[in-house]
Image (cartoon, rainbow, N blue to C red; front, side):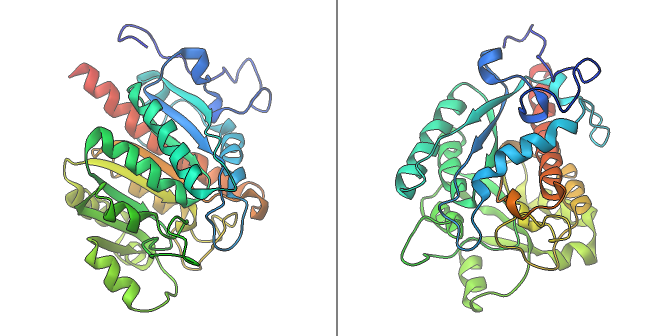
Length: 322
């Protein structure tokens, strides 16, 4: 899209009912319909790295279905993201479900191709294994990036059953490979039992700060968002969100639920508080619709992706006008 073109937005819901037609994210055009995009929403239907419940391979399409009700104006950020930048649904990256190493390579190569067009990525998983190849790809473009990791779990363990690539290991691998800026790493929303205190010790040695779900409850979203903004500064930022950061009351449809999590309102408000950060790409993973009820999890996920997309669209538009 050239600087003089107007972005092509969602299907007009006053003419075609929301429940009609194909379920692209927010009823936006497909990438092949617009040629290029500023923000590409891409699915990765892969969950071979999970350690408990499977099913996140169906998460991307569940989020797309739930996103039919999203509207083009975001009052919380006072922005119409789909008018500010061309956002398009780039379909799915088809990764080998029987070979994790090959799948990781496939996701990385596909992300390389999309980023090479100038797009930022809003990736819909899939399990958290996919964060590693996505971070590798983003770091090729921006250098080591700051990371905000919203999750009930640390995901910095070493191996599971001797496997180095799983949904519990991506951020240890990312630190080892040098794709993260270790001065600006933070988990948000962690809680629940661990294998031992060494989990926390190892995590701290990698450079991670931790904001627990109890911290969010006691200190409030504004203070937490301010703390995160200060930690990130003006670095290029990648946000990775496991939907299990939400309490099971707000996100039952996930593979490894933990009691005592964030509310959907707390998550959305923290993200809105990060709107001034330089968000270069993001992922949203671990939605497993087989365990969902009345699309509770998918609705929360679609709104979360909408806030992240809005942040990126605002920054892209601001960069054009600067």
